[in-house]
Image 1 (cartoon, rainbow, N blue to C red):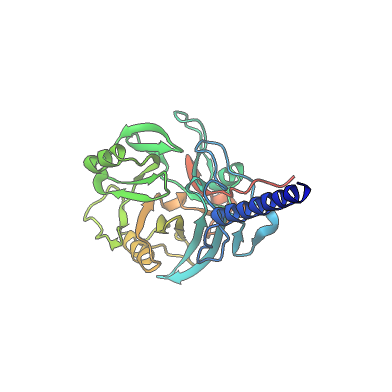
Image 2: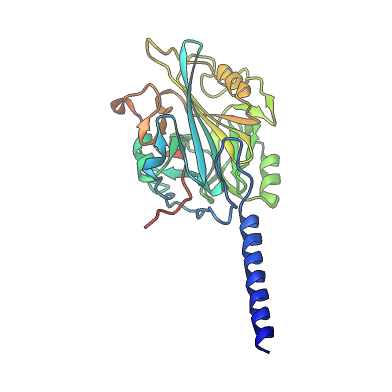
Length: 306
């Protein structure tokens, strides 16, 4: 009997070890092309609310990037059209890491600088949003909360769903919006600005008329989706002797060459700002930063170690 009990204990131990190995293999998913070691979304996820993400590990920042188990950011600069193009390439493990933040409670007129909002929300990288406070219309959703339900026909709309996928609606098309709202997807963030730059891989023709000047050379900002949970943030410098600014068509062409399948123009001019590791990653001084209502940012989902 003693021999039988020993054998049963041994078999039980082997079974438990095999179960542990299988569980580990199911948790780990293939690393992204960027080299980040990404894990299952259930492992690295943030709540869909207005709270900030986890503080990034300061020791993991390098001059032109950041990488932990949940996020990879690569910063790049290009020179075209007498202007500097400042780019952040971002890959995340969970769509909850693509987040937005407001300078103050909705309904107030409070504003703040992009760099300060990035700091307050523990952003790895951040950029300006659509500055919704400058308009009374538009479909405004932030972190799953609907603040405004008035689509503006003379502007395009960007919707980001619960999978982190982009949907761009030309002229804020109400039928397309209804189709998304009636689908099994949830709208997490929605922006009204534009124009649309790239839709489903197709470079868009710039409209003959738009609510603001899209043909002049100005500082510009745009956001694009490259692939599943992979994005580009772009801010182009302007209004200086060194940087002349660009047209929106030039921004669209650049985002197309970067490989975006979806891309959307955001508020430019003095609003345009890109912040990485707490510092402005564009030709703008801290004193020259504009105080605005909202940002788009990417956060780490790795809890700090104690």
